[in-house]
Length: 493
Ligand code: NAD
Image 1 (cartoon, rainbow, N blue to C red):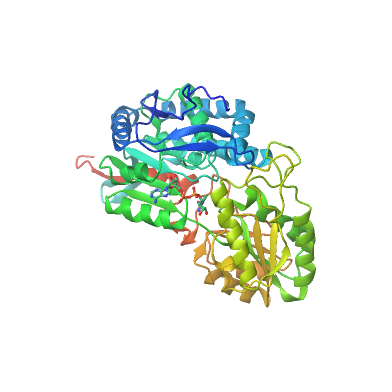
Image 2 (cartoon, rainbow, N blue to C red):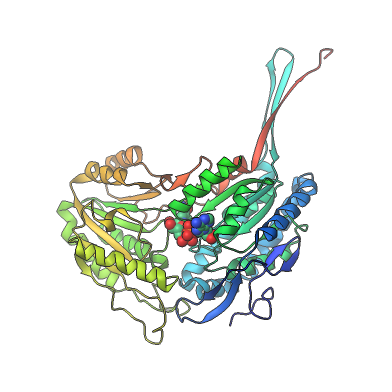
């Protein structure tokens, strides 16, 4: 059993409302299970619409005072939170491994990126400044100032339960809003521990709140009159639903969806380096990443050589329990999800792709009840195959030969999704073509994963993103504030 102060005696996850821990009062609930062992860790009771109403009401009350506090005062709890997250990073990482199934190294990396977002948001006094223009017109000075808007909600997915809430929370509150998190019901324990630390960090009651639940909780937030805006990260169908529903209720909304990311490898690339990075990015977090390398498009002249390198590198990955240091690939989040990934593997075989490495029989000793699948590599994958088009979200990578960068970019741009793409090359001209023509939100050259640092925004295109302002960095300031322009004239001046 996992030990968290905020859990009830029955190991139930709690909401954090107006500075107090409360049991969600809805009728549904769900067990929280360690994906590697099958052990029950806790239960998450779902919130009722009345719970959501109360959270929003308390957030609205807190906003009235918080939004008028000096900005220096508003960032002090964030400095506290940064210190608490550093002090408790190892403990959080362990909870993350047990709740999600990823490895300890991946958990540490995830938390580091979360902490970096808190650090960036501590710079709000500079980032939030508007602009002033003297003599904008005869005798007139004009300035634009940014004002917070009210209660913001963020609805987050299961795959980065420690980091993704921190793409939003620090910026929302530092700009003067109040904030409600609805984390994934699949792995709510890191958010639970995060809110124990938030409780210590010194935010006034109601400024930062936690509400647990599922779709009903989300839909109540989306339709609530007193929610000013919604951030969403999750699968594309739900992202679209959130975008449309929140907008129909007059809210600001940014909704990040699923992905199908491509890697292009040219004959001038350092093939060993590219294979190492590709395998790392394909199988990290057991492929449960919106930045996973899903499809690798290799210039025909080096296809066989590169394929061999990928298979060799993939075969060397150790599948196991995330808390064991030698593990490279941890467990998939639930048995249902494992089953879904296995069905994709079957479809690849049925549609005629070449199974170069079969992970289906991999089962780490001592973890027979875990949701494991070994690294799986397909070759000769054609564009119409399901495994080439749809998001699998598992340790499965698809390789195909292409005739140069132009051909590869067409395949990248034919995808329904537009989250990320990477190019491995030794030619500047290829890199430039790729940079100009590939239609994705995050592009990398000679790097496996295009994951921007938190002072840059993060978001995709096409079916990977609905909205305009993305997560992280400067975009967050614009999302969480409205600009008022002051026009000032003093006729006697
Ligand atoms: P999901 O869409 O199932 O769930 C995300 C959130 O939406 C959860 O909090 C869940 O409770 C809620 N939800 C689920 N169904 C709902 C419904 N019908 N109505 C209202 N709310 C609902 O996603 P997931 O399985 O938790 O996460 C994996 C997905 O997230 C993948 O598609 C992945 O690509 C995507 N993702 C995208 C990014 C990005 O930045 N683009 C980052 C991480 C994950």
